[in-house]
Length: 302
Image (cartoon, rainbow, N blue to C red; front, side, top):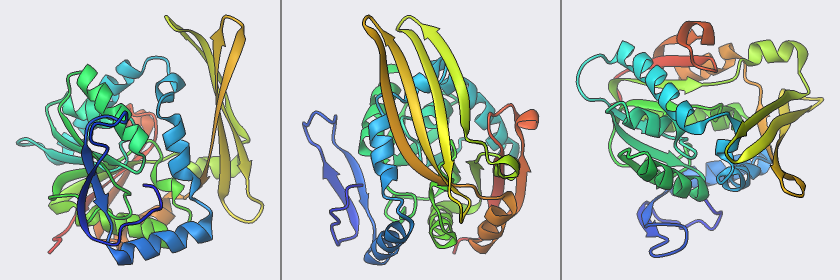
């Protein structure tokens, strides 16, 4: 959310009749959460995350071969994982870092009741358009996953995919998010997060992702990333590039953000500290999902 904070709790409405799309819910954090988030952002230099996802919103579908197919495939895989824990009845799901809706829309198409939030208003606006196009029923809102207390209700499952949590660079910030996510979880509910295999990545600290070339009706495009590692911490800057072929040559789009390479045991310790138990890490060869996932249960939330 923009850093013009409104020091009130509750729910606001914005963008009525604007070019950003229909009015949607914007969830305002409590003062305690505001102060924690602002201090962590100042300390970590992580304020670029909003800019990164706002900028990427219109181009996100270009980083894969076929985004519509990705939506359906990931929805099917996540549905299977969630129903492996919660097998009966309709499942109420919160996707608290939904981006342009890849997983939220996919799960809605599997018949789940899905609420989806994201830090980026532009990503949410794009997600609403994509949900309408794909005829998926999803309720969207703008919220930082470190302060979800004003998102209404509690959910059978809360998810955060696509390596979203590692944008948080300190233990304090990650714990803040995990506690916030737990506050939205029903007793005996579950959470599911997908995170890069940083245990393996830290063995070599690669300098990026090799270029991938795609071609469709829109023409040819090339996607790659460069990674610049800090000398003093497991933090790295990602520069994401999308090159699109046009009549006069190539158009280049670039976006920059920062991640921390969290090891699985570090995340597991913080998840237990936030009140999760029965943690299980699952890997792509087991699930068919493109990243490792961690699944955990929620005890009595009071």
